[in-house]
Image (cartoon, rainbow, N blue to C red; front, side, top):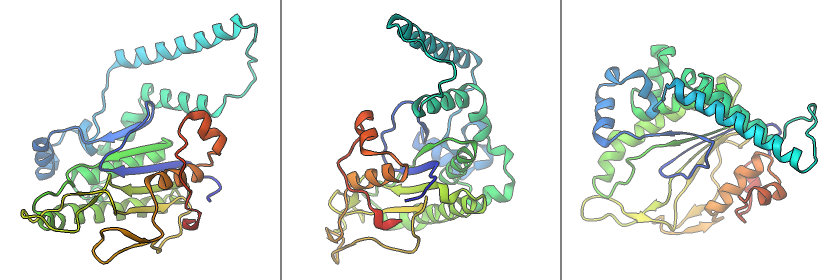
Length: 288
């Protein structure tokens, strides 16, 4: 396992993200998405990368006010119990993450991190002038800003019809271009070894093609891509049968994937139990 993993970047078709983690989400309608991809130069700068940045001074002030209230309540709780909090006691890991999140949200760093107007045109072109490409570029900037867990949601993969046309013309080249640029950039900045990158969907697709040249939902067999964070590149773990209907060799579960992320981040079984996020899965140590 890597000794000093600092970031995890995940992009998925469907994710559940605990409150306090920063999510890049494609919130626009399909019409707005298509318009942005057809005319990227017309997309507003505060919506690039599928991220809506709310710049509201009132909201920032309320956030800081609530954070101060939380600190006062914690101090009052300690005073009521007769336990005085020493000033010099270092903050625990959870408090540090909380304060980092507050600083990013209230201090303007988040808006600066996802402001893609700061990037050179050739960098934008390398990621691709698509919503997905700009989203991954924004994710790279968030890694550089110190955000420890970034989740990117990329919709539109539910190919119940025209599967092969949509893959060939849209999703496959968009994914290939943007992910290659992301991994190259992270490696060039010395960030890849401390950033675990994961691409995974919510389920697979049916082995049989339907009457609309599409593939329907199939939870029995699918795959994930992992890179960085100490992952050994150029390997395939496991295999399926000839029709990709079921795993044949070394099957793993979503719980195993989550356990692998937890292990890479250095979370012990006791910590996972205390946080209530233990999956019961097996970490895939053979990937590292």
